[in-house]
Amino acid sequence: MGSVQPYETAAGKRYRVQYRTPDRRNTMKRGFRTKREAEQYLAVVEVSKMRGEWIDASRTRSTVRETAEAWYAAQLQVKATTRSGYLHSLEKHVLPTWGDFRVSEVSHSGIQAWVSALETTLGPSMLRQVYRVLSSILNFAVRDGRLSKNPAEGVQLPRLKKRRHGYLTHVQVRALADGCGPWSDLIYLLAYTGLRWGEMAALTPEAFDSKRGRIDIASSVTEVRGQLVWGSPKNHLRRSVPVPTLVITAVAPRAAAAKREATIFAGAGGGVVRAGNFRNRVFDAAVIACMKNDQTFPRITIHDLRHTAASLAVSAGANVKAIQRMLGHASAAMTLDVYADLFDDDLDAIADALDRQAAESFVVNS
Image (cartoon, rainbow, N blue to C red):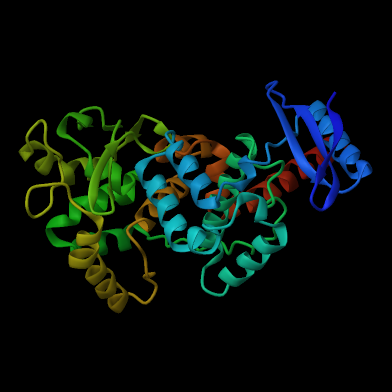
């Protein structure tokens, strides 16, 4: 237990509280005007120590900026693209508002007002990413003994608006491939295998097994702030992706011409093919031309070719687990969540099957 002791000052008698911290350091707090105030403070300290909630007052004086630096340095488990996203949220939104605040000064109501203000300029998805960065920093402050609880908990966020995916038919895939000229094989590859751009860009002849009809995905390359970063696929999952014959036929000549250690697809200068360059120089113009020739052709992004692969696989009768493995999703539940709209016909099939079985049962029992 600590103790309360009086002492004299020019302004009169004051009281100080002496106690031990959980790590058994002696410390004190001075300036209490009455003995009762000092005793109440000591009681709160002792209860917080027993509950494991004690916070060193000196640590609460660290700023959000200082805490953010420590938090960011500890993000070793995430990929370079994710760290880049964190840094963008910090520099653009979090630190300009909260950087100079002490962590103990950040309030729940203040965060709610900040989120409401951001909603006027950011979409729901981006706003949630920015909020998660601030909340993660404050969680770090709690774990590091700078805060007793996270004031960001329970903040109301805008609802996510689920974007409708752009799905192409087989005929539309061919039209787009034709429109991309010498890059038609790349379009076929993305639209029928569901590879992510970085996985395609890192693909080597060794990983392209035309005899087995498989692509072994073990690496990915991503452009982060103008620099290429090589690493493992998303979710760190290596996988074997089935390749239709039409894709093998399209890609085989380029794979055969590539050097063993080089990537199959290369940019104009012989390096990694970059998504931004391909989109600006080839893809967008081909999409616009297809839309002019076909009123049903959707305005799509390169990533929509991955969604197209999922759609074509479902229409071909593939089950959810197979599609999950093909796309490299962390779980089948994630696949269902992302592509729930593709399985609407399955709901009708369930109703029809139940009607059929019920009718057969009634006939048997009658």
